[in-house]
Length: 628
Ligand code: WTA
Image (tube, rainbow, N blue to C red; front, side, top):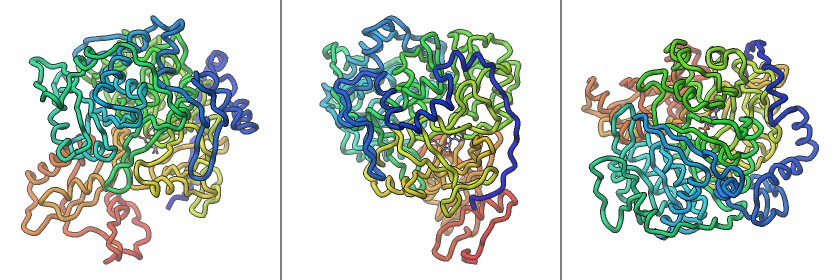
């Protein structure tokens, strides 16, 4: 049931007016009205701040559920991220600072980053990669990952970045699903001082992955891992053997830029496809007006490029703005929980964009760690990925923001490509609420019949009009794509529950489908269930999300064993290990419970909501369809 009365707090914080005076967006209300009066003109103006090789002829074409944006415009996003700045006053500005797990640091100016990207792009071409081909990137959070993404974009190859925490089955599904011709990886990633081999996971994932012609390996370990001649290339040797200049490919606005897999409600992940022109305008726009990036900033988004947040707000958006970005391979509490705050002091980071799960972890460690460092360089804080609960907001605002800084809680999705709901700098902030739709975005909250719900009543969050950086397709699954746009009045269903207050502020209550957000990562119940069932001891499995103070949610798995299998602690451990290897550590259940039966509908569907309700001691709701 989605419609419920929700008691809403009225607590409000007002940032100092000078933030608004100095922000790119000085009057969100006015900007929003401007959008409503002339939506196409609004986006046209923003698009003109970027360079087009050939101007577009029309802002958009909307034939539900398919949109095209900036029709017939020709551009290249890597050109806009790099060449545009290198040719001008940002040539010697630092584009990227990197901090390794072992304390090593590296930096690239815009000019240097462009040079690396051009050479690596030529390297990919020398492997036969051409415009439209798919390249899979399975790498740790190192500068070479950013270089690989931009190199693909430069030559029009479609990248599919897979988070390095995924296991071999998950990687296999993503490589074959996208038909990748080349996979770029590293010998290992370093976490907490430990070397975690990546290449062996890829090797296993490549079994029966017939589209892959080459793999490229970034080798950082000594002695160097050996490479199979003809099939495995060294990252830097590949760059050394080719020309240094690589002109950007002339891309049509609607040429695909990347595929990014996200968990679905079936066992198969969905390959979300984004295109070039609209995505470029949407990420640029929000980096400028929501994250307020300025030339003097050092900007840190703590995500990994393996997620949409990394695509839009580590790589593309900030570089389009000509920002100095900071990235790190390190973990937030290694060697101690003060390490992130030390980066802020050391690099003079001014914008920090992070996730509620990290904030809650730091809360637990207490104020002594941030208090050890000078955080005065900070001027803006951001959050994304799951609801920023009021307690976490308060801690972030007071302990890190010293009760002064604006906090933007940004709601959006892999599918939206860019921020959709937040507060703009200088607007009042309400703990627990993401905020209002940003200028350029129209949303509503509706009941089951599709009618808008009044303030204080929860419902489904929908998006009413197309926007430039919306996904264009689900890879090889048009039907799945169409379902997104089947909300009331042909709107886009976000699959989130939300509620609005009298001022129009929106609080996101969580997913309304079978996705569980664990530490900010989307995990499909069906994916975990099929991983469990693929173990020989398991006959059936049902997975539910249970609220967790730190992670937002944790995964609880119920399993029915096959005949002759006996429940032992060792078996449970094996099952957990099995999920870890096949799907990856992010999908591990926190608990496995062996049961004799699972609640099912008469048609045989497992009723997860009943399991969850029983677990939480809540009312399981309507049981009329249950089998027994
Ligand atoms: C959730 C991440 C509350 C939401 C960018 C959404 C949020 C899903 C917020 C998308 C937020 C994201 N407040 N919930 N500020 N941001 N979510 O595709 O449930 O990894 O549908 O994109 O994360 O997750 P995704």
